[in-house]
Image (cartoon, rainbow, N blue to C red):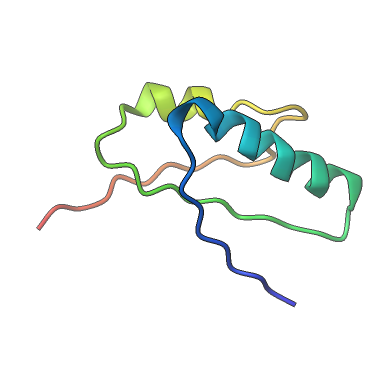
Amino acid sequence: MKIFTVSEVPDNLTNDWLQHLRDFDHAHPGCHFEVMADAPDVPLNRIVEVMRVNPRLSFEAFFKRGRG
């Protein structure tokens, strides 16, 4: 089953939310999560900071959204 979630999270809680998701993912090996962020006004270094969870994500990709 796939469950799609769209979340609006205050900046000061984004890492906590991602850590919560990562904890669930780690505790249940059959689960797989993909997380995307639509944050065009957030500097890339801030996004990288927010994505730091434990255990580390196995793959991190950042895509620059085209403007047009």
